Image (tube, rainbow, N blue to C red; front, side):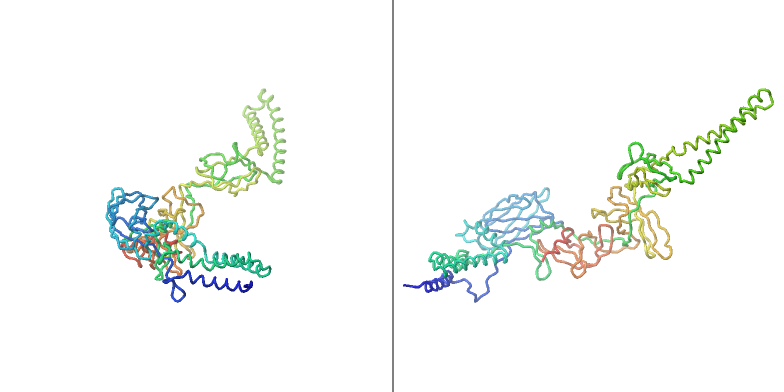
Length: 551
């Protein structure tokens, strides 16, 4: 009778030899490097003056990407006819790509394809050669299960090495626990479970190798940086990154200089609301205007109740007492003069002078009584929008207090600081909030004081520009000198890891090459490329920063 330990070692040897049984001729046993398990799908490319085409074969289907050649914009509404080895066929639209049934693509070979693309009024013919290597072909015996195998492979590929390691540790721990239970308690059932589990773990890789077709690979079109520094970006990745291009055109441009500037209000379309007399603020009917309120010139914005100091109040009381005394004397004198005027002892002129004197004293006394009752009205000096408000009920406002600031947002200036003796032209620009150039017109320039910068004022010629008062920005002022170069959007030029300015050039349908360039400022949204690329090159104008992050 075989002992427990002897049975254990026999089972272990059987497990180890099971792996050899699963292996067969043609599989690697460690004496040769395994083939690459990841490669790009077979593809055919073609380009013309209008379109750029990439056809990707995955199993028995062909996915066709069509873009505009110059701008790389996807063509989504078109009619695509294809002359295939099995005859003419029409591709169907699926989102932003075109799908073509191609059962012939499941077999290895070289296939000539003719594409007819009709997009609106544009019609073009493109020829391409699709090569299906032996490693990418799907055997006929597996054609029915190709889709299922692809789905399983995609799920397995999503597991990282860390995930697989955790799974392996968990399975090993479970089996080790079963082994300990079997050795301690000598239970045949537990030992049997352990033996079966070890057999499955050892046989699984060989079983997968046995069922997988020979030479099968996993198709993964992944955007990546090539060893020579170029970028391989499949059309599917280009759609996600929204890669757009333009053709480089060399021309003459006026040189520009950069100046530091800030946005200021137009002095003729803005104004401050201040009080001429210090006092306590009171709201007008309807309340104080809030920030962003549109007001018109002459609108009452606040009331100021004068507040008198103690010395002023004492002086007023003294003046009132003196006026009361003078009024009393004037009234008595007038009473004595009236009977005398009837008898002729006092002339009528003297009587009228006494009456006028009394009336003047009473008016002065009434003015002192109503002095604290009359509030100063603060009115808007110009029409515009309230950009600053410093008003509250009961607030004491001094004569220099800025209660409100009113500006017209459609009339703004830019104040720039010019260093050096360069003469600027009448045109300039800045970069707006949407990265678009905002045009400026020269208003005037001052004189440099104490060797400092020369102030230069520009008027914003676009009322719809989204600029904020006090915003700091860079002014690109045109000069009289002219240079020759290629105009490019500022977003097309990025900073490389070594500090160089880089522009990506679209070399092929799915290949982008970084080029070091030398640039000069042109305006708020463009630069001049004076060296690094040639006329006709397709520059990436949108998505260059995302391409540069690929590794």
